[in-house]
Length: 618
Image (cartoon, rainbow, N blue to C red; front, side):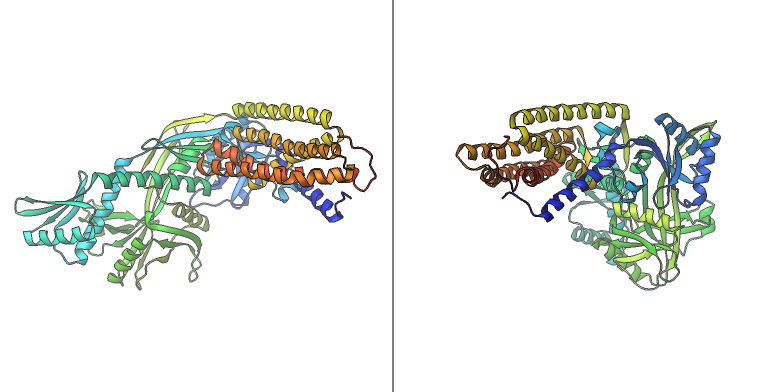
């Protein structure tokens, strides 16, 4: 009686060993490191590591190792954070024109743990340190961008309906359409009112000409502002997730601000580059009637803009944009099947697809250009000091005749490398910023403060654990020692699962672990008290053990399910630290059920199972 089959014992042992293996990375220290990746137009090669070594050695900066890290990246490990800072300065001063570098912390794991992809838990901002920034969203620019889109749409609509007009422009918070006579004005007003019912229209006579004014209502303006803020939050969250920043917190603060917390980030300049970077595409028709030579000399035709391609050749394009990056719903990188060159495959939303199909249908055989737009931060040496500057790039990467109409899905070529295609697809997929942003406040929490929080949190866990272990051993004797063993196993399994999920541990998360330990030992208390009750009722020791586990099971499951429901609600509606607490609590509930019901029963079966007993040490 009270014996598990061999397979069940082996299964429990395998789970415990699995937990120990994947909890082990959290024991190792973390090295201050620098991750180096290629800038646009360049690539990381086998010689990159040698270049980095030479720069560090010439600057007299000690380092542990320079090694290939992931595809297209090199990692440099340093003995101290001071060496890391000096190394970052040396690398930026010498290599920032070809490579991007970011400071980070990397666990110093042995090769066999890295081979099985075992990683430590992420630590939250309060434990690991990191950067918090407060971002202001330019709401006025969001409204202006919205009016600019309406301007292009109204211009296209009037052309489609063959309504004669002079100009369409927007300024002063409204769109103005000028006509030659009252009949064209009336026809234009009717067409615009039918298609854009959300716009408020009025007319005015200016000398011999007639004007139609269109503006957004206050409610529509507010809706546009709210959408811009929400879109920026989504874009920033997608961007830092896609770029590998672990568990960022991106949330709204007030009417026009966004707070971003990035645990483990140590380089504010790199963070600004990630958050503020824009890489998008615009599709424009070429101006085949205007003179490129005149445009180069400063006489750009009305309705056109002068651009340059990557070879420095001038190209004249129409000012009207066919589609922009905010109409792109998905993007992926690959290679063109015909030429084998890097390409980005683009999907448009329904409105962008209709617009693209309409324009390409009307302009078959005419050239269309793809304009690449990017804002990025570079470091330049000015008076012997490294100075970071923002550089805006607008260049034509592709110019080709429209062979046939196309709409929702197509591809764009003309990129320098597969890495650039991948990066561009990443930014397009993350979405365009709906409005410009400005970082108005920046706080850096040092790892020393985080280490103090970790030390205090670990101390609290150890004190709580020690008190529980002593009480259980004294009060329940052998059974108490069993409970202590499974309690320690429970802690190991929580850490292992958090590491496997790459979940983030915060101070509230540590509180969740302490609470979980109390709940785990509570399950053992229910079982042991039930066994005592069965013994008092005259049952045999073996029958008491069996009845104790069987009759306490429903109570333990019910208590844990109700707690799990609360944890799910906390995770669903909470943010930041509340979610951290909910995650550790949820993981702890499942591990507690496993260790308290199966783990403790397996150990007690090994000690007492299959034996004739006169009493139990409980």
